[in-house]
Structures are given as C-alpha cells and as structure tokens.
Image (cartoon, rainbow, N blue to C red):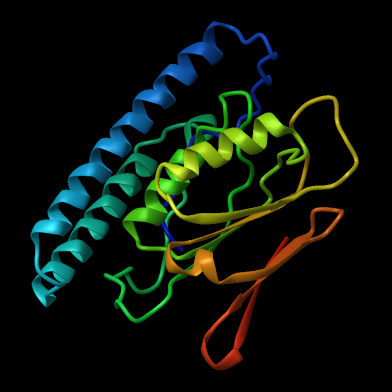
Length: 231
C-alpha cells in the first residue's frame, strides 16, 4: 500500500452544515494550502526526473531512505501522544518499499480510503492523486468512498482534483441508488485507469448498489484484461 495521509483523532466531530462554519472554513483553507504544497512538490519531482537519467541503484536506495525517514517521523508523533483522544493513527504501508517502476510494467493500487469528505469540495482526492503520481500508479481502485456519486457536483469535484495528476484517464464510480439528504452515502467504489491504459478500456460496468465495478482493457493478440474493484 501507499502512504496516503496521517489520520487525526477518531473522536467523533459534528459534521459541518452546508453553509459551513468558522472551523470548517479554516479547515478548508488549510487543506487548500496543503494541496498547493503537494502540487509544488510534484512539479519539482517532475523536473528532477526529466533531468536525471534512468533510475540507478543509488537513486533507489535514496528513495528507500526517505520512505524510512517519513515512517520514523510519523511514529514519533504517535509515541508523543499522551491521551486517548490525541492518539494519531498512522496510515502507513508495510512490506517491501515501493521502488521506481520498470518502463515495461504496469502498477496497480487498491485502498480502502474510509471516506472522502464532500463538505470541503472533495479535496482529499488531491492527496490521493499526489501519491499515485509520485509512485507511478497506472490503475487505482478505491473502496468505501462514502460519497453519493450520482451527485454531479461530487463527481465533478473529485474528477477535477484527480485530473491534476492524471491528464489522460478513465474515471469510474459506483454508489447505491438509495439517496440520502446529503452527499454522504455509506459504501461506494471508484476506479481510475490512466496513462497508456486509458485508451485500452473497451468495456465498463458498475453495480447498481455500489458494491463493485470493473473495466476490460484490450491488449495485443486479442487478449483482454478485466480489473474489478470490490467493497
């Protein structure tokens, strides 16, 4: 798995109203600043990749060291928590470190995101897009998006955030047809197919209850590959 974000306290907070309040406004402003920071880092990363030659063992070692350092920093914050309500749960990957992708390979990524907030214009999608771009993901599957994908506003906002990182892509979503009084809806799945594979998608299908979706990509010699995202 890829690192997406450090989750804050699990303490239940009141959901902001549609008009928003002072705290919600401050939170949205902070998130926007964070998104600008991610975009700036991504721009610098792309410039470095253009200047560098193909990945060498030394570069991979340096990347692994940076990942280890980031894990240590988050773990230090967890250890410094003194009360139950201040405990920070780190959403970190485990296993082998993610290395630079081979040009002839395809990278798939799936994660249960435990909800994308809609009251701050789905800006969480920018964080997801940033890490998938940095880690060279080709096909992204998300479960438990907790959004009413039938809402044009929600669909469009998420797609715009992700499009900042995936210029060529196929965006698929599925949620239940049972509507709520808000854009929050339990469950749901989403899948993003990008890069060279976007033009290979020949068939798409979604579940009416938002439990799964899939697409089929056409390869060489009439060989098809079907990818399913399930919650």
